[in-house]
Amino acid sequence: MNIFLGGFWFLAGVCAVIYFVTRAALPAVTAPGFAQFQRSYLLVYMLAMAGDWLQGPHVYALYDSYGMSAHQIEVLFVAGFGSSMIFGTVVGSFADRYGRRANCILYGILYSMACVTKHFNNFWVLMLGRLLGGMATSILYSAFESWLIYEHNKRGYESDLLGNIFSHAVLGNSLVAIVSGLVAQKFADMFGFVAPFDVSMAVLGVLVVVIIMTWSENYGDKTSNFRQSFTTALNAIRTDPKILCLGLIQSLFEGSMYVFVLEWTPALTPVTPKDDKMTEDGHRGVIPHGHIFAAFMVAIMLGSSVFKLLSKYTSVESFMRFVLFLAALTLVTPVMFPGNQLVVFIGFLVFEMCVGIFWPSLATMRGKYVPEETRATTMNIFRIPLNFVVVVILLQNLSMGMIFQCCVFFLLCATVLQHWLYKHISGKLLPKVSWGQAPSQQGGMGETV
Image (cartoon, helix red, strand yellow):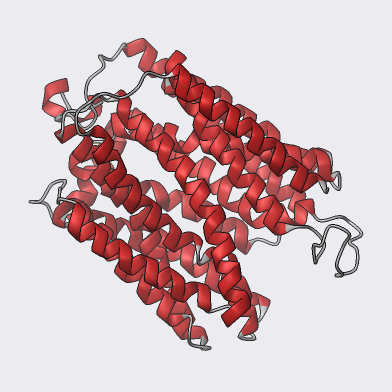
């Protein structure tokens, strides 16, 4: 058994233990209708994430099979991040004005159109697909969460239960990612690299139908146009340091995470790779990408369970300081121990666990501090520096060691910002109120929690 498969099974066992410990330690939720509300959101969210995960593993392979050069493929990837950076804020303002439910439906339509373009061996058609995909990604990481927070608050559920939903979403997302990877590989083997995109399009079609049938509509500020919404969101960021801190933390951490996604393969590949032949454990290639990906997803699941335990004993603002610092330490491993697969792999597993803690934690903090009327717009503004970081690093011809050093620096900066946020909140001793509460009830938009 290779170290990657061994790591997967070890983490799977630990994750199962932590999951049942968490269930036993946390009280059962008894709020009327909450379980059904949670299932309604998670079903839609899992379908949305499945539509995304089904495409991921074979994008590069499809472009390569069309005879695209390495430079052309790089340009296509940069276009996706650039589209999310430039057009994402506009799409986010549509969610606040015209409805979060409508924006989630638009996600399914845009991403389906992007899947259609994958059938054409034409650089500019594929470029159009990347632009559509970038816009869809901005919706995926803003409108769904905005809809959930508004509905959760409107129905009067306790604020602590929102973190419970986010934790389940991360757990389910990891499971969906593993299953989607297996399904995508099966269809790619049977019908070619474009087949997973057709499966994704079918899933996205189901997503649109489920949203139409099960979700009600909610809005941010329906009276403002894009310019007003954008200006209001920028003003909230400028006048409330908590919101600015969250945006910078998100950009620094997720920027490092996306760069990590592009760099973990070379970091784990031996300096003197073996021939591309079938190995003793039945794997073809230098490293077992499927085993490693599965281990990463289990690590994220473990992190989501750890989040629930940590949330029981301390505040999110407090424990995230240590999580971000630990994440920085883990990405030192490929710099200090290059070529040492075991040490680097362990470091990457711990980093992925930190990712599993980070996602529900940041969503929880956004639910507290980001104003309701421009929530989706504000969240997409956060993604501008995030995508800028990724695009800049992708366009530089940096060594792998230098890239990871940049990621470590970004994460250390995020740690400092998180510590400042914790001290700021502790100093003000803000009262605990419902997420998304009207700003006027706390004396101003900056104090909305």
